[in-house]
Amino acid sequence: MGYTTPMTLSEELTWRGFVNQTTYKDTSVLDDPTKPITFYLGVDPSADSMQVGNLAVAMMIRHFIDHGHKAILLVGGATGLIGDPDGKKTERDLKSQEEIEHNKRAIAAQYDTVFAGQQFELVDNYEWFKDMGYLQFLRDIGKHVPMRQMLGREFVQSRLGDEGAGISYAEFSYALMQGYDFLYLYRNKGATLQLCGADQWGNSIAGVELIRRIEGAEAHVWSAPLIVNKTTGVKFGKSEEGAVWLDPEKTTPTAFYQFWINCDDAGVEEYLKIYTLLPKEEIEEIIAKHHENPGVRFAQTRLAIEVTKLVHGQAQMAIAQDVTDVLKGANVGVIDEKSMVALRTEIASTVAATDGSILVALTETGLASSMSEARRLLQGNAIALNGTKVTRENFEPQDFKNGRLLIRRGKAYKDSALVELA
Image 1 (cartoon, rainbow, N blue to C red):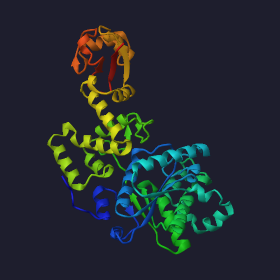
Image 2 (tube, rainbow, N blue to C red; image 1 turned 120 degrees about the horizontal axis):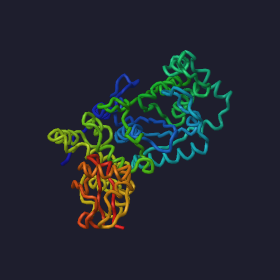
Image 3 (cartoon, rainbow, N blue to C red; image 1 turned 135 degrees about the vertical axis):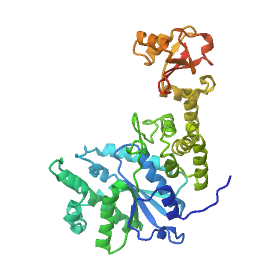
Image 4 (tube, rainbow, N blue to C red; image 1 turned 90 degrees about the horizontal axis):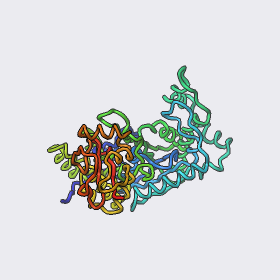
């Protein structure tokens, strides 16, 4: 089915939920195709991977690019050496330059994946800070930044208060460095707009003020709201295992896929708008079908497919689907070897004979802490082989499908293990 209803950029950003704060009085300035805007987004390489929260802002950038605006992506090799204090109660531990270099390369590679086929320029603020002297920075930048403006920041007040941990001069000066990034890109790249997450509004405004004071020119900020899980009220992008990363070594493609499959009903429409490029009409159709039978999780499944495909590619998305289907009850005997490799990564596994002990398999895979607990689980009808409850203590040849079976404790598919013929 074709979807042909076009939206202007300001309309699309509003509909998708990418509007938090902006310095623009009239957002229609974004909609003139004859006047493309050069904008930038900055990210510090504090880790060697972006998280799902960073991906939301990256998706916002995709819409700016798709509507003809010019993107500059800044990876902060200089600011990363200091660390952003905003939102932190204590001083960050300083990272070595070698670690920052490693993180920069990893994040740049992720941008190449997320923005595959898109035009953007990648820059590093270490290039313009590395040769800048202290006196030059104080005279050219520090002279134009009022102390009242910096001391008024909420995080500074909290760190300097009676219950605060204090703040170093280095972290206090971080906002000046980020402000200079905007000034430098304005002068050298023609950037007049900074995109950011809601938590970076204060640092971004510092650049707007510098450009106004030093250049007598107008620059702007557009911030996206932080994404919040509507069911729990906490910042979106966390799982039981911690943060959900884009790096497959930190969060496997299957675990990534399952994060989206398991997201809350209350927020799934918002996540489809933010994390996919699906058009308005198609998302509305998906949500309508989802409401017909929420238990099937139709919207979450489509969300998982789209986001996993974007971040990890079609092949890894298909493997994640296979593994998830098996964990939900599909025949483990029919998946191919690539999916089997992924399945072994996701759950514990062991080997057994066709008449081997189910009790031993439960203990070896950690589904039971002891033989006596394994026996109690079996007697309590809590163990299933390939989705069928059993109370016997030994496997039988027909349990194995192409030399494999899935054993599960209880109902949660994360409490599953793979048993293969020895």
